[in-house]
Length: 131
Image 1 (cartoon, rainbow, N blue to C red):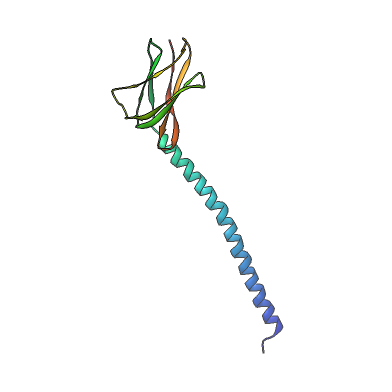
Image 2 (cartoon, rainbow, N blue to C red; image 1 turned 90 degrees about the vertical axis):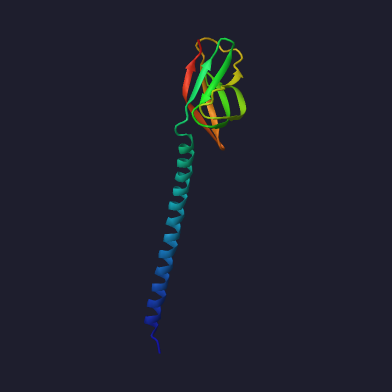
């Protein structure tokens, strides 16, 4: 016959094991979520790494852009406000730059361009001041 004291020790041991397993599951959920969020951020940052977009504002109020990576679209900003967008693919270092009407670009306006690589919008590393 098994004593009641032995049964109590078995139940206590099983409960301690269950508490430890529950703690491991909770800690793993927190760690796993943090790792996944960090992984997504790293993927987004490496997608944009190395992207530069050469920008030239010519005398006819057109903006020519020339990206260092293939892009699937772009957004043009004047002094931080979105000025226009362009679709279609532009190959990296393409000789035929894309022209987008700049509207009323004034001397001293700061022009920046964001390019789209895959589903990620990437700020180009360059800005120009219109002359």
